[in-house]
Structure formats: structure tokens, C-alpha cells
Image 1 (cartoon, rainbow, N blue to C red):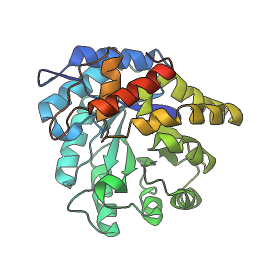
Image 2 (cartoon, rainbow, N blue to C red; image 1 turned 30 degrees about the vertical axis):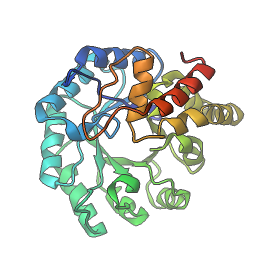
Image 3 (tube, rainbow, N blue to C red; image 1 turned 180 degrees about the horizontal axis):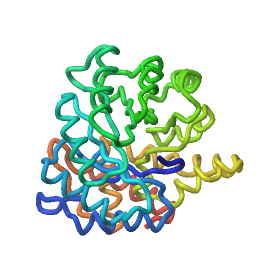
Image 4 (spheres, rainbow, N blue to C red; image 1 turned 90 degrees about the vertical axis):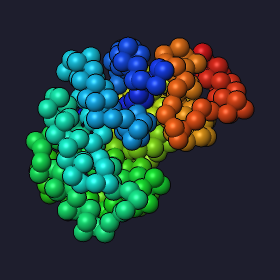
Length: 290
């Protein structure tokens, strides 16, 4: 699928609607700055507050604008297996390259339920599927043994790990086939997960710093570990500030300051507080982003 930096891209809104022109500009910004994959309709893309028609427009726009240059991966997960299958079929019909499947939230399930959930979705499509473990949002961990069982499914090709549990990531690496991919789901864990045998990141900070995030990944992959560490440390505070409020609130504020989008979110998300916005602005100025 990809190695290096894939961006979990925001969905821009204007006057309550998806701003497709701004979305195209964001995609161009990523393509011009070495991003290796485009991940749409994930957490950062506010997928949970978009209609099926809006999802179709976002996917179609992304696929057309990317034009096959990099993979387009669509978040099609749900806590309702049937709905996740519907979303997956939509993504396949619209020529996406892969799907990202968050673990079931709220109703949760057992590890046996996770296996059946993911198998049922994978069986419904020929697309490459990526598991998404984010227990901080879902309240449910995908255990390493469960990942290993799901890695036996032909089109389940990797996992996005946002649990920040390096012991679990090492255990996944021990149990899965060599070609099974592990991506960091946290920008402050890019290098730690690389050091555990990972393959890159599905990134939030890449919305703001696409070239620099890919440069960090490329440096590690080519053996320039000191440069990779320098970049991870240099952008540590910005990464932290992008999560000072719930993602993607700060990321949208940053992109609005950069002139790419309107600073518009959908409830229950609300704009960043002025105090936090000023702190983020200062760091962006310090890094000469603005």
C-alpha cells in the first residue's frame, strides 16, 4: 500500500457544506509535498458527521484529484458491521485503493466479535483493508493476538496503531507475517514505531507539514536516524499543540491561519479557544510556517 507519511486529511466546510474547492487545494498541497498516501473520512476528516452523499463527493473528489499518483484510502469503519460494509462498497465503487477500519466503539465487543466484524467487512470487498486501533476513542483495544489472526485474511494488509503501547506493537511484529504493515497513528510515536519494525505514519501533523513529515520518515528508512530524530524533536511541540483540544479542532485552526480553509467544524466540535489558538499561532510562527 505505502510506506512513509500518509496524511489523515481534514474535510473543509463552508457555510455548513463540504467545501470541495478547498479540499482540492488541500490535496494539491499534499501531492506537491511528497505525501505518500491520502486517507480521507477518518477521525481527522470528521467522517462521523457526514452524510452518505457527502461521503460520496469527498471520495470521488479525492480519487479524481489524486489521479492515481498515490493511494487513496477511505475510512469506512463503523460500530455497525452492516453499515461498515455499505461504506466499504461505496468506496470500492468510487475506485478507492484501500479502506481504514476503526474498531467498533460504544457498543464495543469481545475479541471474538472483533475478528468476525473485520472478517465480514474484508470478505465484502477486494480492497486492501487496514485495521485501526485507537482505544482512547473507542474504549476497546485490538489485542496483538487478534491482529495476528486477522493478518491471515488475504486483504487485511496492516494496522494503524494509535494505542501508544510499544510492547503491544512489538508483539504484533513478532506474530504477523513480514509483509504485514504497521503504521503509527500518533505523530509523536513515528520513530518509536519505526524502531519496532513499523512502516510509517497515518499523520495529523502532515496536514500542516507534509514535506517535513515525509522527510522524517524517509530519513529513518534510509538510515539517517540522527536527522529523523532531529525532525521528530523539532516538531514535538507543534504535534502536542495539535492535540491541545480534540482533533481536528487545532488542525483546522492551523489550516485556516495558513489560508487553506475556513475554520469551520460540525457540532459537537467547536472552534479552538482564543488562548489556545494564540499558543498554536506562536509555535507556527516560531517554525516559520506563517
